[in-house]
Image 1 (cartoon, rainbow, N blue to C red):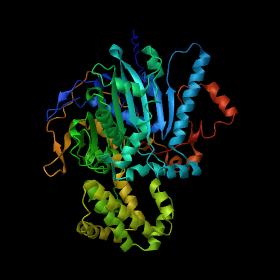
Image 2: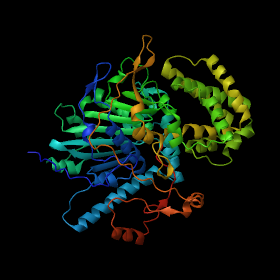
Image 3: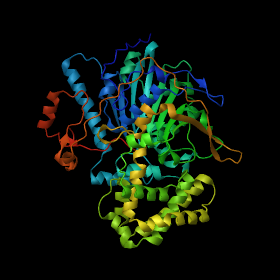
Image 4: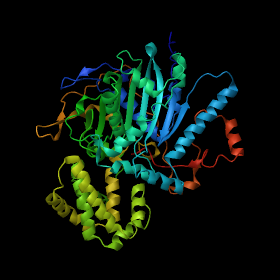
Length: 566
């Protein structure tokens, strides 16, 4: 007989760091399906499930596992690229010595994953970039397990968005298609799916009296209506795109029943092309989208699941964007909007990109383009792209125009409209002439990056954190479908978003950290370091590693202001 797991009460500090939601409040992830406006059964949108999902998406950036482990999550696996750190777990050991060893191994696995996420070795960066020539393999995901009442289990998979390494961005720019999906997102999903046999749940296996339990075993059981496992997925930006492709793979290729799945994405890109083989609205996924955010408009053509759109307002912008309001900054953001405001979906983005690259070749001299390399940017792909181009910037711009046309044809089956490119060029031309290119790109970063964030620096609330906490009642629902001409159209679901109150479900928002003083904030990062949060690492083991010289790059690393972002 399988043993029934004992469900310990989670400590009061086992709460999310963004929304304050208890990380063991999992019943809201398993709500029975209700009909939507098109007659499909799907789990209803839920406020607590949305907040939990935001916490899971955010944790994939920080790998701060301590609150989750205190809430009873176990059997944690961390994947970065093709490297899997499996077996981070908690449990009762026979002795204090074995518990200390467990703590040391947990800390080592988490630290290795963190180091991989911020790869600083130049040789490793080059090798990582070269790997991307054949296909995207920069998948980043956290998998873990939590017992539920009645001998059931919640399996959580958090997919991380685009990381800080410059080659993490390559997959985002693979706008051609594979198997009906955005090629880059599809390839990332393939890499994760191939790890299903290696992702193991040892503590859960012991509770069930099994010799071994893998993610592949769990997914196989989820084909049965009586499955003991319920899959919960979440992701931000690129991570939300991988979540969609993986869900399609499970439901269509592996026969997993949608009733056992729930997923929430934040700032989710579109992933699937306009193909009659897909029914975009049939997936048990929700996508929280900020109307000011550019990322949800691009990728492929359609989202899989239900889109929950928040119409941005002044309250959201004032609370989370941090935009300077002096006249020069406002004018610069308006100029950036003139250049990038033409983007409504992926085809118009590719058209605008072709127009911008062609216009730069016409309006900017070689010296003006070379000035982009004078000092580093805060956006890694721009640094590397400009450095790689060197004195051949116009040649590189020409290649980008050609690729935009190829990707446009792959997505739409039609050639790019040259007259539309010419019209957009004329609309962009005044801003390109009036502003130095570096100033214009910096204004574009300031305009479009804050609306995309889960959480800002110094613990301040990001746009999507604000929506989850303050704006859920203003969400409007829609699903994608194809019109009579086979073109994607987003159809509204009026009145679909009705959140059912849960007793005692309102979270206590954690106190935000004090902002660093101005003098400290301006100091170089290497002058103010702090230790990372370590999971179950006793003080004795720290002294052992320091004595061995292992603290360099392991127990200490430069403090970063950067919050989670895609």
